[in-house]
Image (cartoon, rainbow, N blue to C red; front, side, top):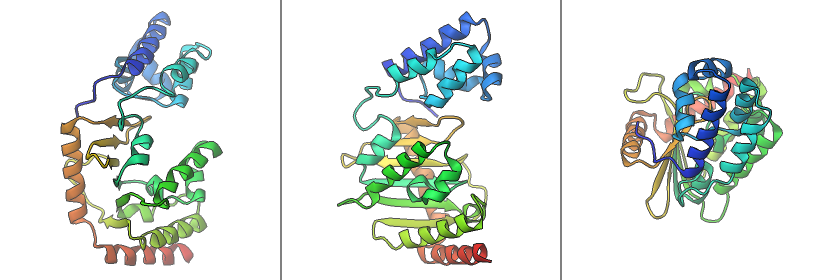
Length: 260
């Protein structure tokens, strides 16, 4: 997929990663092995084509033995980077969107996770708090429309134990009753052109941002080609998914299974 034009902040951080890597006299491949990612991901970070998380900057510091230089650089350049309006980090676009669409292949989408479910997946209580804060957009006055397609396997994948899963499924059933929320389940199958989870945020101006989940940090794009691909993929998924009514029935059956 094409990527959006690198911002000055992303380029500055990437240049610092490259400088410190070269000072350490190691290749991208060697660094990738040390931090458990692909060499292409290191290349994307260094060229400013993707924004990594702060914890990844910390891992780079450890791998390069650079103290906190890259963590400090991340804070300086990326924490409050001045990206174009509506196209900053995905949560910023999410907070101002009028329509949100999400396909989740592995876990319940973040906006619909219970605290207990999120707590199993996230690295800290602060991260859980941030996720719950994001969810407040669904209960505000004039909330966005949220359309979610979940792979059917999500309801069978144990996260945190039966009690957590039962409560999570019950919460999905409750949220599916809200007028602004549509939840559908996609039968377990191969869907051409779809390689993983993604999200689409559509603004009142019709501007759009897509977020593609990749390890370790994800990719965002406002490139029209990317948007067309992802929007088309979502339409295909939704067309092949169960109806809302059938999806609710499947969620009820999942609740029964996790109750046994």
